[in-house]
Every structure is written in structure tokens, then in C-alpha cells.
Image (cartoon, rainbow over all chains, first blue to last red; front, side):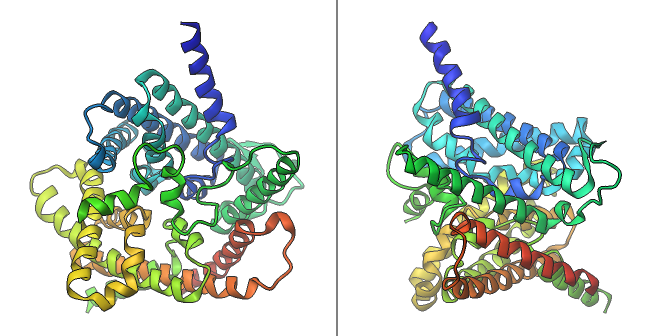
Length: 247
Length: 194
């Protein structure tokens, strides 16, 4: 009992801090850039993704003995897409303004490589309870990162955070930070900071192989390798597998 | 005449004004990953144009004649992602058998496109904006053309940048992201077009 509690805590810590999907692994960059125009939007997107991630991790883990290895990727996609549809309908009904602000990015959670990545590298080979908490941890880590990036962009771009004026009145907002280019600049700074810290950590002899190997990395098919390369059961990246089935 | 005008507006707005990568952030992974050389970038762009145009046609037909007919529009996300994944597989097999020369040129890029969120994004945008099948195809083509323009320009800049002395922490992705940000500012200028 004690050990399982430890494992749950370890999973949460792993998702939020040690393998934070956005800040450490740099996965799921499309929504990160697109919806972080304000802290509220970042929070909404993060929580929606977290719910979908936790549910799909739980479901995939429960079905892990039923899903045949060869068709696992399509099966994962169907499960994830179902939960995304549920989430979208709920948002439409109860939080229409958030749904409108996030627009097409809500259904696009389906192709967020964090979710497929966790399904492939954790939920498919682990029991339900740790998988659920792995999903919650990763989801909260994603939410935290998105909210922070959103808060920075909102602060610089409008002088507010969560719609509360924080900057003194003489501050002139740098409007570009809430527009598209600002997203690229903030992310560039973030990855540069990550590179810098990575260099320091590497100089101290720590293992940094997991840091920033997702979309931010130089791999030609990052969406794929970002999710599937680490600790995958079976053989090789997700899409290559999908190709094999076709033939 | 009116429809031609509408289609032209869709063409310009989707390819330049609200560029798929630089203002909507879709398809960012290939945009950053496959933009080292101009030739590969152009190849990727061509493959994306091909797949997105085809996918928006297929998803448009699917939406109008299946989902709307049986009032199951809420299944759109599931249907579109499965159809797109199957379509890319099918296109790959078809090209391999029938037009090997085209397969040689595009083949390596095709599997990468399955997970490209731009493809699903276009299909969903077409539904959200209530485009018909023809308008949807034009929108798909224009979006993909915008992607190609952006990725080829970025690849050109990156080729030049290889000889520059970049601060250590900014080497690799950060400088590419900064470049993309500057390109996004430049593309903001197109908003005066419409």
C-alpha cells in the first residue's frame, strides 16, 4: 500500500517537474504557441488536455491486454478522439466563451503528441492506477507551463495577468506579445534558457538526454519521435508502425 | 461571379493573411523539423499541398453526404482523423504502384504528414466556417500553399544562417524560432490585403 502511494506521488512529480512535457520535453508545441495569448486561455486549454489525457491513459491501460499490438496506434487515436469529442461537447455546453476562444484547437487535442506519447510509452505497458496518475501529472505539468507562458505574454502584451492590472500605469504594453510573433519569441527564449541550463547540467555530469528531444529538437519527424522513441514497447516510432500495417 | 470572388478571397486569406504556420501555429513540427535545406522543404511543401487538398475534398464529401445526412456531426473529429490517416496510407501505396517517379519525390514525406495537425486543422476549419466542398478544397489548397511558402522561405534563411556566429544558447531551435517570429511579423503586413 505504502509503495503504491509512493508510486502515485512519483508519477505526479515526474509529470509536473522532472519530465514536464512542455518545459523539459518540448512536446505539443502547436497548442502551446497558439492558445497562450492570455493566462486564462492557457489554463483552460491545459485543463482540457489534462482531463483528456487522464481519461485516455486510464482507458488505454484498462484495455492494454485487449488491444492487439499491431493496431494499437489507430485504437489509441479512436479512444483519444472520443474523449476529445466528449470534452468539446461539455465545453460547448458549460463554458461557451472558453470554447469560442480556443476554437479549432480543442478538437486538435487529438493530434497533440503528448497524449499519444503517454499512451504509447506509459499507459500501454502499465496498470490503470499509475497510468491515471501519470496522465494527471503530465496534464498538470502541461497546464502549469501553458498558464505561465500565457501569463508572461499577457503581462508583456497588455500589462495584465488573469485580467487584473499588475503593471504600473506608465507601462506601455508591447502589443506584439499577444499576437502570433510574440509566441515565437517567448518560446525561443524558453528553449534558449533550456539549452543554457542543459549545458550547465551536462558540465556537472548529469544525464540530460531526455531534455528537449521533442518538437524543439532537430529530428526530422519530431511529432513522431517525440512521442514514440522513449521506452516504447514494440518496434520503433508510431507512424512507421502505421505504415507497416498498410502494406 | 460572386462565387469566384469569394474563392479568391479564401485563396488569399488562407495562404497569406492568416498563414497556417505563422499565425495559426498548425503544422509547426515539420515546419521546424524539415526546413534545413530548400530542396527538402520544397518536397515537403509539395507533399503537403497534395495531401491537404485531397484530404479536404474527401472530408468535405464525407461531412456533407454521411455525417450531415445521418445527423452525426458530433463524430467529425473521430471520422476525420481516421479518414486522413487511412488516406495518407492509401496515397502512399497508390503512388508507389502507379507513379513511381512521384513516389520517389514525395514518398519519404508522406508518413510524416499523418500526424501533421494542419491536415486535421483544415478539415475542421472547413466545417467550422461552413465552407462547401469546392470552397473547402480551395481553402485546403491555399492553406497548404501558405505552408509551402513559409517553409521554403525559412529553409532559405536557415541555409544562410549556417555560417553565422550565433550565441551558444541560441544555436539550434531558438534561433529558428526567432526567425519564424520575424517572418510572422512580416506576414502581418499581408493583413492589409483584404
